[in-house]
Image 1 (cartoon, rainbow, N blue to C red):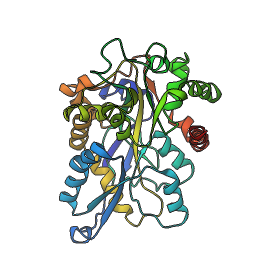
Image 2 (cartoon, helix red, strand yellow; image 1 turned 45 degrees about the vertical axis):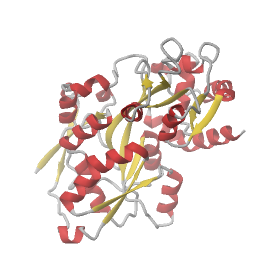
Image 3 (tube, rainbow, N blue to C red; image 1 turned 120 degrees about the vertical axis):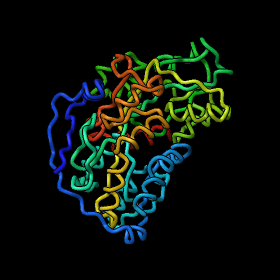
Length: 358
């Protein structure tokens, strides 16, 4: 029998590592029964992803090693559209086997009963920083912050926090805004003076009043995360919100981008399995594989993320990649409240999409 431990509190994210293991509960998992490799070779697992260099990381760190070990092929699909996931489940025509889901997607999908329960006879990750829900598994934590071109906007000529991003008098220039409401509403409220610790429940009307103020200065609406960075690289805009791994990849390609850790919005990313998939066992095996400490370390150092495996986090924090990790004890930084978004995501995204078009 294998004992798997989980941290049940959100405070695990703030403390991290082995020191954050107060309040552990144990779950007992039965031995897994796997299909033979000959059968697995006929299986193709479809995993949603987020495009660009992110896809390359998923391929290098997770997908290809998983195929080499199991014989199960992995196809990556650039699509995070939860409406399509819901349509697949409700029509009993599921095409995607594993969903790479930010917090708002994972929790709202759970509310709508779109996910299979996790099979703990297969998924046995060991100690985790943040607990699994019954039907979705935290994989890592990512950080969003402000991005600019260091040549076009040298020190003193660019914002480093959300108040600065909304201050078009002090920092004139074209803005990139995301086409997603989650994280965008948080940034708007912080820019209007709401302390990160007081964000939730979000004051939606106040957030949209701030969005009305910034809207005339938006030159691009980014539908994907690569769009956020590419808009700056290609000179379509001056300032954007995006993610450090995207900026780092652009820097490696020669772009003169910079990123601010002065204020970040941090959220967990999850894996979930759509209800009704024909490849349920293979999907669970893939999630288990991605949570292995060696895969989590490779993912964190390749993508500059906080891993959810305690063993991986301890190793990463002791290495050179630690300089790129957010300080979650910094009171200016935000941790997204996934429970609030589980209850409000659908309505907020609909309103935000309509607002963009007006």
